[in-house]
Image 1 (cartoon, helix red, strand yellow):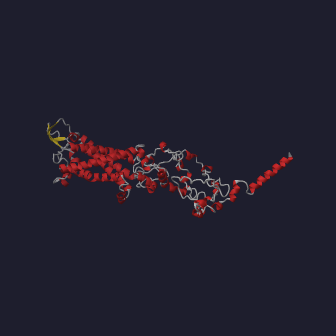
Image 2 (cartoon, one colour; image 1 turned 30 degrees about the vertical axis):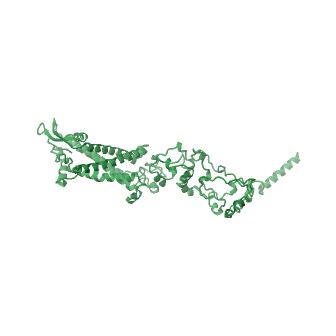
Image 3 (cartoon, one colour; image 1 turned 90 degrees about the vertical axis):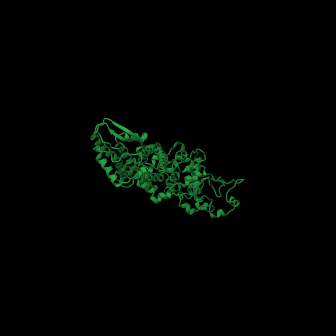
Length: 518
C-alpha cells in the first residue's frame, strides 16, 4: 500500500514538473508556437507560393479539401498572410494566435482549421436573439462578416465603419433591398447620408448587437423629429420662449437641420403673437361695432349682381380648405411633441394638400388672366393712395358712425383699395414664395443646390414658417373683415351663392345708411 502511495507521489510530481516546464498542455504549446512561429509561414512569401506548394506546408488528408465558401460580405482585409505589426495595433493585438485558433496543436497544423468560436471569450447571447442572429432568410453572417478580427480597432475607433458602409453594403451582399425596405421613409437618401442606421434601428441598448428583428420593431419618427430628439446625447434643457438660437444645437451641428427638432423659441413666440393679434383686434373692433350698432328692422334688396362666378367660388373654398388643413398639420409638424404619434401622418397630409394648393393657385392665375377678371385685383384711378386712406378711415371711424361704405362692390370692381393691396401681396407675391419654399422643404434632395445657395434647409424652414404665420394671420383678419358688410352674413352669402346686393333701400329713413361691403 505504501508502494502505491509512493508511486502516486512521483506521478504527481512528474505531472507538476511537466506543467511548470512547459510540457504536455496547450499553455506550454503557447510558449513553443508563438506568433513569431505562425508568422514564419503566414507572411507575404506565402502568397507567392502555388496552391500545391501551400498544401505542402500543412497536414493534408488523402484528398485535399476544397476552399471554404466565400462569405457574401466581410469587413476588413482577409489573407493567409498576416502583417504582425498591424495586427499588434488591433483589438486582439495582445493575444497569441493560438488563443483563438485553439485546434492548432502542432506545427505544421491541419489543412482546415475549425472556425473560431468567438463565444469562448465574448458574450454573444444578445446577438443570437437579434436581427443578425436569427434573420428571416436564415443566412446570418458570422462575427467575421462584420468584424475585422485581425486588424480591427476598438469600438471607439471602429464605430465609424458601421455608420453606413457596413450596414448597406452587407445588406446588399445578402440581397436585402434597402430601398424597398425604406419605401415608407420620406427622403430615404437624405436619411442614409445624415444618420447612422443605429439612430432608428436600436433595441433596448444602443448597440448594433441588440438590433431587434425588423418584424418586431417599427422606427418612430417622433424619436428624432421632436424637441426630445434622440439625435441629442442628453435630453434638452427647458428652452426659454425668448431663446434666440436653435434648440438642440448639438444635433444641428452633427446632422443638420431636422424639422420638429430644431426651432427658434423667440421666433415661435413672435409668430404666435402675429397670429393672435388680428384675433384680438377683431374682438375689440367687433365689440365697438356691437356697442355702436343701430337696430335694423328690415332691409330690402332691390337688385342682386353676380360677384363670384361658380369657378371662382370653387377655387375660393378649395384654397380655404387647403389653408386650414395646412395650418393644422403644419402645427403638428412644427411642435410634434404636442401631438405624439401624428408626425408621419401630418407630413403625408401636409404634402398632399400642399400640392392641391399648387394646383389651386395655378387655376386661379390662369382663370383670372383668361377671363380678364384679374382686373378686379388691379387698382383703379384715384384708389392709391387717396382710396386707401378713405377705406382705412372707414374701418377705424366711419363704420362706427354707420357712414356709407366708400367703395361699394360692382360687377367690374368688387374689391376696395385695401383688399386689392392685401390680395396682390398675399395671392400674387407671398403665396408663390410659400409654395416654392414648401417644395424645397418637401424635396430637399432634389433641390439640394438651390437650398445650399439660399443658405441651407434651416433657412428654408424659417422662411416657410414665417410665410405660413403671415397667411394664418391674414386668414383671421380676412374672416373678420368679411363681417363688415351691410349685414354680418352678407359677404358669406355672396361667396357661397355668388350673388350680392346692388342697392339697399331703408324702410325706415335714418335708421341705417348704406355701408356697402367690407
